[in-house]
Amino acid sequence: MGMKVSCLQDNLARGLNTVGRAVGTRTTLPVLSNVLLATDNGRLRLAATNLDMGITAWIGASVEEDGAITVPARTLSDLVNTLSPERVDLEVAVRTNALHLACGSTTATIKGIDAYEFPPIPEPGEEDERLPIPADLLKETINMVAFAAARDDSRPILTGVSVSYENGLLTMAAADGFRLSVREIPIEAEFYESFLMVIPSKALMELARISSDDEEFSELVLPRDRSQVLFHMESINVASQLIDGTFPDYRQIIPRDISTRTIVYTADLLRACKRADIFAREANHTVRFVAEPQDGMGGIVRIRAQASETGENEVVLDASIEGDGLEIAFNVRYLIDVLSVIPQDQVVIKTIRPDKPGVIQPVGDESFTHVIMPMHIGR
Image 1 (cartoon, rainbow, N blue to C red):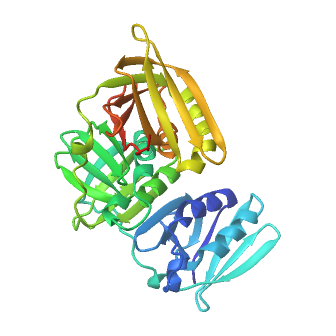
Image 2: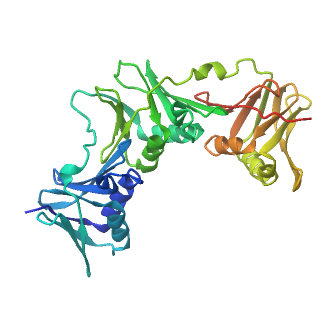
Image 3: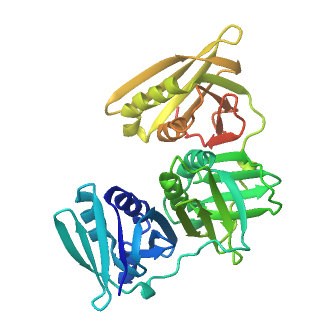
């Protein structure tokens, strides 16, 4: 007898969508293009891996016979997404390694590969150290940091996010050579170790994408061999290889001596940047940020973009400015990226000189710091 199990179509579709992004593409091992289905203590376990990252999801099911099989992920997922929202019956024919599926008036047989060939995905062990992180805070932090990691592999360490923990503070940082994003989360847990590791940004972005809003905590599990990290939730696990190497000391590039502090409304500045990008994209995405202090604490900010082919535009925003007037050029895409993830109403832009990096922080929240290198513009 093989596996015999039934579950609801929407649960199965959601589970397959959760693990689907870990399925191996461009792989020489056929089993890596497959998703594992296995019964597990009265639930159905779905898993996929590309050897760098593995995602496991458990869904409610009624299990008649225990068993397991792997089948092509895309075939099963595409099929399940088109089924009517009712009960799906799954049965494995052991002799032929095939999965029979029935739902409403539809039946299908999908050819599979034996589950023994599926690479093991790390599970949290009894003795592994676990740091519980509030799930919503983790998701928010990943979204505020991971986008700043490098996309290309010329410096593999920069494609990761530095994750460190010491004395109740979890710090995440990412940088690509042009910008740096850092966030610190205070954590209340009886966890006395400290650690430092570099996790691929792709794995963290997947974790943020799939962690559901009803999860309260995401446990960061430190396996003993330390070449991997595991995030454990009630019905989802995400395992990832770590990136070897030393993350650059990013604290030294955060400017200390600020000469101008400009406070503006986040949404207004974001809109101004999106508008500026219409012209800036023809000019290497360059925008000029001009802070003009006026009497007292008042002032205005001009966001100016100019392209020799298409023309120019300028948006003027009210601001409160402390310090000297200044004109500095930034890549407008980088401004848009960071302003899009700051939930606070106002941001402060801290600058020194046109050739020094600028710092962006939410007003009233020191836990997040974003540094952007300036662009050099010919006068």
